[in-house]
Image 1: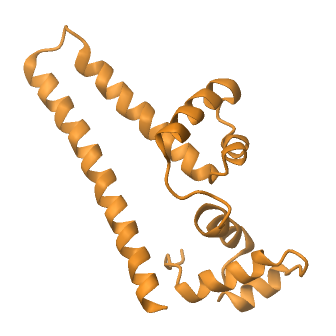
Image 2: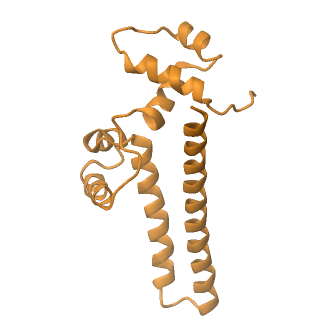
Image 3: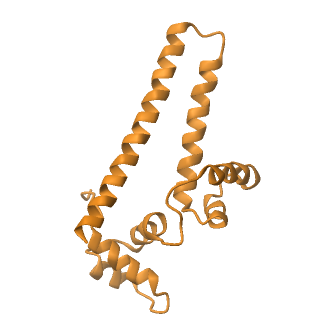
Length: 151
């Protein structure tokens, strides 16, 4: 098993240059040379989910409502939904699953048959999920600021 490597700003810049110019096709061998052994699937997913300038980075309330509506229409076809909204498919999928998990916890809390301690535990779980989401958002912002300062 190989060690997981974080993407460097230099690798991100190479990907932006490669995918930014679709007229010059790059082979799988070229990816391995340019990006230190990373496979083409990793490169494509990194670009589509994190670097593509045509995709919006953060969801607005109207985006969330549109995702909810399109999920009812198309189901779990994240790429199709993301394409219509110019949002990365991974962002759509993550939003949908986190919303479902949050809604399931709230349904359990609203169940009147539960005792007070059970409701307290569920409220703590909801708070923990929100805390982890906020912590992840701050980590991403800190990483972005670090990349901007290194330029």
